[in-house]
Image 1 (cartoon, one colour):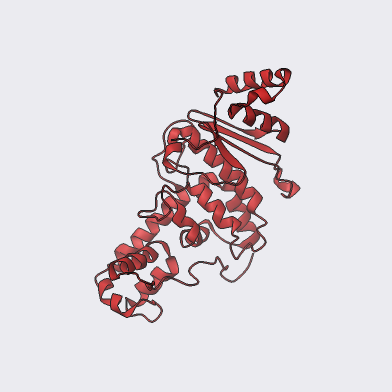
Image 2 (cartoon, rainbow, N blue to C red):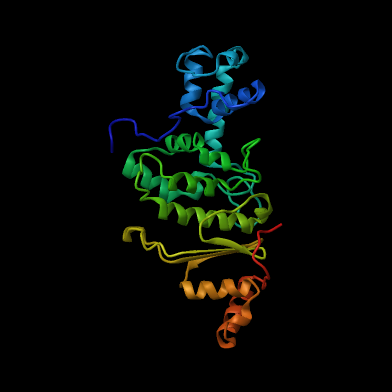
Length: 291
């Protein structure tokens, strides 16, 4: 384990509020956004106030931050980090568990990833969360107020984007397969919780067929020690199937869910349709996200 503080990549170039054509109000909001989500940027403000040379902000914005309460700002930052790490008790329905309605916090969704990051790179859950929160990937989270990303994605998917970037402490992206496995599982459970209409899904090799979330990955590049097998993910409101499968079987199931079952021989199609019915899925037509 390294003796120095690990490089998590947080806040290498914080937004100072400058933006071509941006009005003063918009620039103030940008700085407030960084104060809430960027721990090093926030620490520079707390240590020396808005005139701190280490708090780089446009000169005409300095007075606007003179009344910001550093203590309250610290508490808000900790609260955000706590919710990202531990989740909040707002989920309901099948597979919701602890976390936001679109998925649990990092500890519940990524237990194996957090353990691997700590053991391999000496980065704690809180340090990892702060780097993630300060990253552009976090801005895609559906719960970020005034996010320019529209409907936004789940916290687990945002975290997968962050780790796939990859972060400085894992420059080769070696942990990405493990992160993907845990993220895809969390997304499937969020869909099963009935929250699918509240977020977008952009995971690679995933799609909605009707209202059914479908994804598959081989994980051939994952180390044998992780024991990641080819995995199928199917989910709809109230039902979720995550488990090992062969790609031809997944592709056949997806073809049926897409309403193209006639392309499959009857002796193959009928047992698969029975399996889908046993899982609680209905045949769907089309390839579009849920409304």
